[in-house]
Every structure is written in structure tokens, then in C-alpha cells.
Length: 127
Image 1 (cartoon, rainbow, N blue to C red):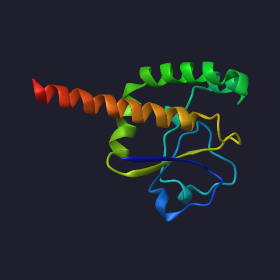
Image 2: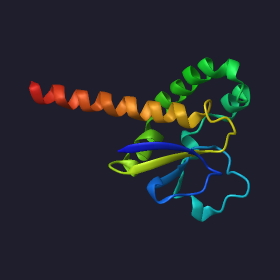
Image 3: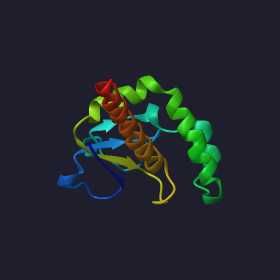
Image 4: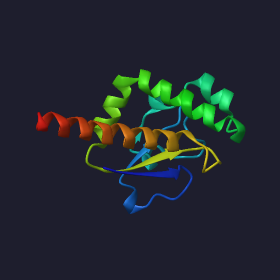
């Protein structure tokens, strides 16, 4: 699985693979056919999104709070993992800030949880 991150307003490209919107709100002016999957339930809660308000000073705390929300949302994450398994995926976000947004945190979370599950499987095979 390859995970890429892209602003939803950037032009779709062949190499994007499965285009997954990870915002709770649908972005203005974006056609439905530009996105393959909308996972609004994996996006930060409205409360967290409003609190963060893309303020860089809140970034570290936002990441920690969003990770907690992701950890508590196992069913939605399992469905997302199943949909993207073995594919090239581009996580799409609407925020203007390319360095501080939920797609970055989600990609890190998916990569980390994938690598830890691979390690668990490897350890089971050894025993």
C-alpha cells in the first residue's frame, strides 16, 4: 500500500490511485466524480476541527487528540483499511495549510498501525 497526500483542489493525476476524501465537510466546487471514496467518519470530530482551526500553535495537541479519536474509531478505520489494502491511495484534504492538516496525521497513523500489524504477524509465525 502506498499512501500519498494531496489537497483536494489539486488536479487529479493517474498516479493518485484511489482518491479518498478525509474531510468531514464536502469541499466547495469539487465534483463528486473527482473523489472515489469519502470517509467523513474518519475525519476529526467537528469539535476538534473547530478547536484546531488550522492554528500552527495547536498542531502538536491536535495530532495527539486526533490520534485518540482514530484509536477510538476502530470500525471506521477497519473499513478504510479494507478499502485501501494493497492499493495506491491519495488522501485528500481541503485545508490551505499543506503542513498542518488531518491527512498528514491519518497517513502517519495508517502507516504506523500497518507496520505494527506486520510485526505482530511476523512474531506469531516465529512462535
